[in-house]
Length: 189
Image (cartoon, rainbow, N blue to C red; front, side, top):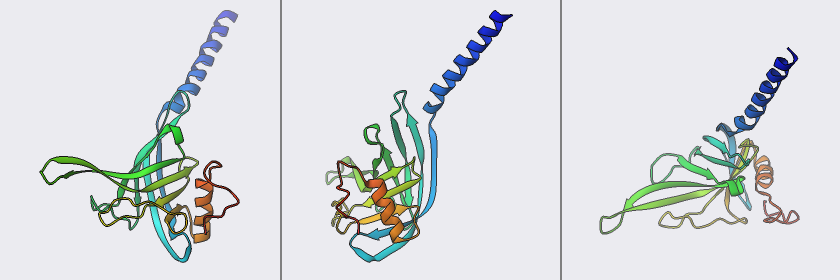
C-alpha cells in the first residue's frame, strides 16, 4: 500500500512538473484595445486622441525567449499601400521589448517584373506583454518611404493614455534602456 501511494505521488509530481514546464510554451493571445494619444515631440500644441488595437500571439521557447507576431491598427492612420489601417508587428527574441511596424506588399518594376516591397510605419516599444506601449512614427519622404525619426520633433503614439503628459510618461518608461538613453537628458518634451 505504501509503495502504491509513493508511486501515485511520484506520478502526480511528474505531471505537475511537466505542466509547469510545458504550459508557458503554448502561445499567449494578445488582444489590446486601448485609448492612446498621438503627439509630436517638441510641440505641446499637437495632441490627438487615437485608439490602438493590437492582436497577435506571444510564443515562448524552452529557454524562455519570447517572440511576438501580430497586427496593429491605429485609428486614423491609413496604410497607403493597402488602404487599410492594419500593419504587421514582429518582435524577435533578441530584443523582445521593441519591434517594427511594417506592411509587406508586391509591386511591379518598369519592366513589369514583380518585386517585393516593404513600408515601414515605425517602431513599437512595449512593456508587460503589451499592457503599455509607445510607437515612434517614422517621417515619410515624397515616395512614401520611411525617412527616419527624431527625438526632437518626431511623432509618437502612447497607450493607454488620456493626455499628453500620460503619453510622455508611458513613452519614456517603455523606451528607456540604460544603453540607449541618459536618464538625465530629458529628450521627451
